[in-house]
Image 1 (cartoon, rainbow, N blue to C red):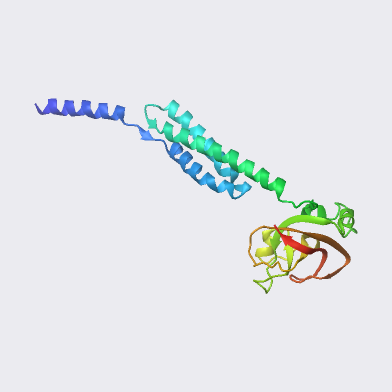
Image 2: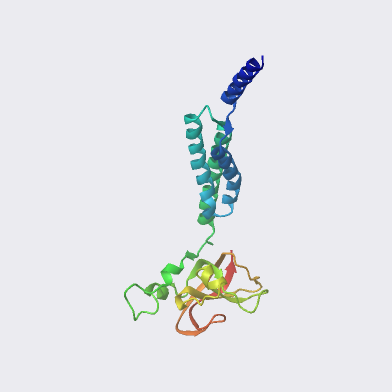
Length: 226
């Protein structure tokens, strides 16, 4: 009698084992990444989140198909892929819209790479382009170099990257622009990327920079924050 009970129990355990399927970790991860993908709307650099969500979701679907007797979670994977795809398209479209509309009419977009001396010309302090830009209305993005003033800032150094502005670096001359905001505009120091439009001015005999050690070649007068 006892043997029969044990045999019956063994059969029941085997049946339960056949019907039990674990939830795919990849499918859950896909859905989690999809939910995080909403942050891609804040920065184009976070587009990696929906891309990862889609790739992990596709992997989860393949894994579940190959191990259908062991894994479940196909619905999670499909939902994650769908949400990630929608947010990827929305984020990319929004980033393209911002890029197309952020430069004020009549201004020229420039970047710090254009302000560097030409490669191989050791005696060249500034590239010929900066002479062309002298007096032009330009638009550029950069970071505020931290100075003693934290609020109500009118004049500041706009530098190329956060390594220079936030961690004690001393940016080279061609990686700094001294900005003077138009009245009554003022700003508060932050480590975020800033968009500034103004009138570009080149001083071939550099003056003393307001912050950081050394001088400055490039100025942006009558500046406006975007």
